[in-house]
Image 1 (spheres, rainbow, N blue to C red):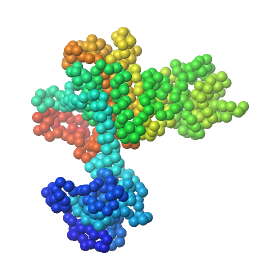
Image 2 (cartoon, rainbow, N blue to C red):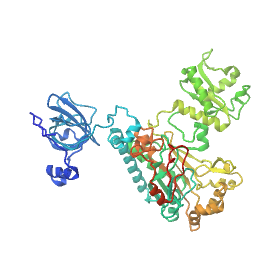
Image 3 (cartoon, helix red, strand yellow):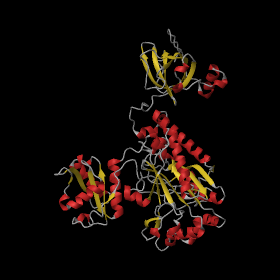
Image 4 (cartoon, helix red, strand yellow):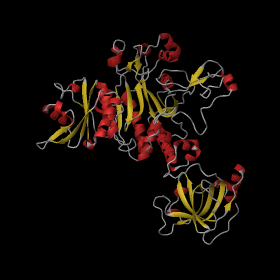
Length: 623
């Protein structure tokens, strides 16, 4: 690439790329005083007020447009945006070349401004272009208007990160994290780091195991959360702890779940659940305001039972109506056998009467797929006397009083669609709750931002195959004081001092007041089928700590990936993580996970058991 000749009004020189780091350093030293660096300004921050200045900008060639035999328009991109540079003799420049451009900023000629760019009123001319590094053609277009397969994006993630979308998302993430830190520190919380190499604990999720090189046959695990460590910090008198914590769970991946994730983890001593919730809500509200410029309204507060009754889910989206209605009293004396059930619940879908029969049949199948015995649909249509009537295959089985009571209970209007489920109470609520989401829920990232606390969860959620209660959250949650006397006699009726925070129907995180008394912790362990010997072996350090003055304490963990995804307008948390895994848990960029060498396995005292078939993972490898 040779130096180009100049043309009237826009002289340019294109220099070859310097050799390695030493060449870059020499280039910097040659162009400006050493302290000045390679650039004077960022591409996206130049405005009309800067016209007339000689500036140097650095970045990647986003686009080159030829204009005549010599003249070209170069769109230069850095993380702040794009700047148009008028360049003479730039034929050898290609997309994604790394360049430094020095020139004079001027107004764009009349009629050539670009309102879609923040720098659209200015351009750089009389440019000198220096190539800092050449580049092969990119594996995909970074133009946001071009769709690219996600696997390709992840394989070349270092290129994908240059895109406007990923730059915006990661900077939104940094804004959220900064706001959370400020909120925690403003409320007197101390940042404390907890171990990444931990001991196995039954917190309800599968753990990643790490073999010990020094003690063959023994393992650490990567923490599902800093739960026990932060409780021990409370015993240690930390009083108010927080951490931007990395957590790992070996569970199936989905849109809102990765193997490794980040959470705002906090714990405080001598607090009530309301105080913990106030700390958390303040931090989340500050993060939302930092990104959107608007602090959300105070959170709605619902008990777990009320959330199921009104919305059919324990993470309700309260941005829209269509609440569930109890129709048991309306059909108390019904002759319609299908409604003679433990519970009859219904919802009203505004404007849903326009749905065709095929769509209605699909809703019936959807309800059955969710576990319901069936689904009754009824269109609200004009009545003979000018009022409202119902159109449905089941109307002939309903009395006039029942039809009127149904319309009144649901406050139905002309053109609405009523959906009803008669079944066991919880199933009826959950099926309609999912149909409510299917039919009415706006995208999670659309405002308004509506927070909701769900409280008073059951301490135990059903029983296992051996009839033992299963912890609804984790086994360190304090029962409600008024329910303590039923911990042994009727454990499934015991409510926990636990609470979830929901934003626009996405659960942001969970927390609870913790058990701080040894005898209660032992009772909960016993209820879960954990013997005294097993409890001592696995949790002796925690039970022992309770003997030395553990204060009452409680905490919470906010899922930062989920919060950022909502605020960034993404429905998949992979889009707000710099280097995520695919849904199969693979990393297309590095090829992980990969087998270890025989020597490495031997050093760890491990062998890989063969699996069926020579092509199966691990099938031909032994340590």
